[in-house]
Length: 141
Image (cartoon, rainbow, N blue to C red; front, side, top):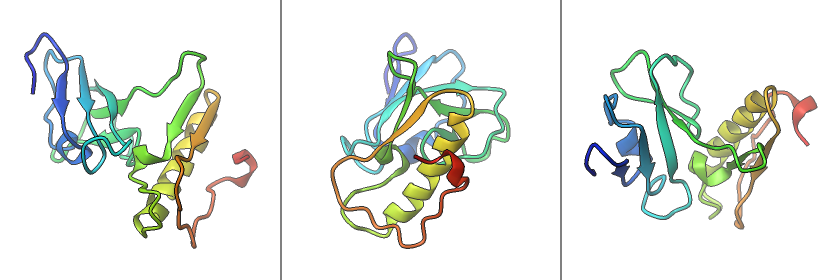
């Protein structure tokens, strides 16, 4: 971790989920989803009033904390929310973990598209999704 004047840096999402509410820390930088530089890292802020469900990619609940969530900064310069599948733990290696990541990412994209333009980015790879079903197919393009 870094000093109070700068952002806190943690290696993985698992560590973010353990990070207690920050006090005076404004942001947290996560270096990867499961391991360093795997594409699933990013910048997060603490929303002390949130009780939203943990979606596995843009909103993370801290174990043992009822109110407050870590939320990913995900809006681009053009105002479009671009969700990266790796943010939800997808590996692109054809593993079974990708199915849950695809489901979580699709649900988040549908939820966010109600308030702003949202796109889902698939990094190059092989994604398995035998049972994937969009939560509201009218919104999925």
